[in-house]
Image 1: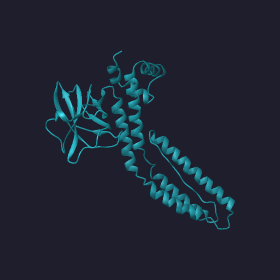
Image 2: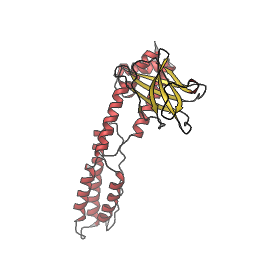
Image 3: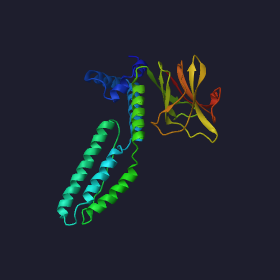
Image 4: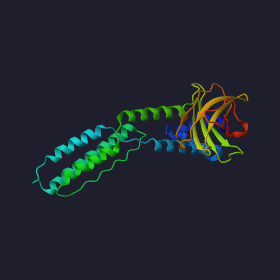
Length: 270
């Protein structure tokens, strides 16, 4: 088996996302056992997707906030003579409604992680305390519907991109100047789009910046500069028409028209 071709086919990404049938998934697992390089790529892809999902988890939509305060206003109008047991039951009903609402948002958001927490007092002034606690909750939740839609669309586009069979996943490993460094470049041979995921690079000195280069028959082509961001956070760079390898150099802030060869930190072949 040609491991590079198998890795570049996109089947590993589909396996991680659960998009393969039983026979195809079994084949991936068998190949991962037989070929260490396939096992390594499979682990790297899983870490990349997990890191991305963890860093881009979002909160539920503002619709919950509207229903929440509406329900609180109804409970606040209850007469003081209502037994504590009845109000406790009403509080439990409201808590169940909130949990159901959070589950609904989680299903709609698919890959999004929702952590929904509330604490209710069971005293004589339970309904007043309920209003105060939920006001704090609503303020801290920072609901932003438009932002949520943008994040969902961005993540959908990202998963579509990396699982496209035309997208090559290139692992750039550290050279002698930075042996422990590693970065992953995703390049779509059809759309020419390029993304980079920094796994490990030394913090650049003040006034310096990392720059990506595409190597086309030995000729370096500028693919743009990028910032230091946490692992799993993708950065889109300049489109690349043709390439057989990618490299990252350390240059002056803003980039250089030609790479400083002695400052190549990572390099990887397609």
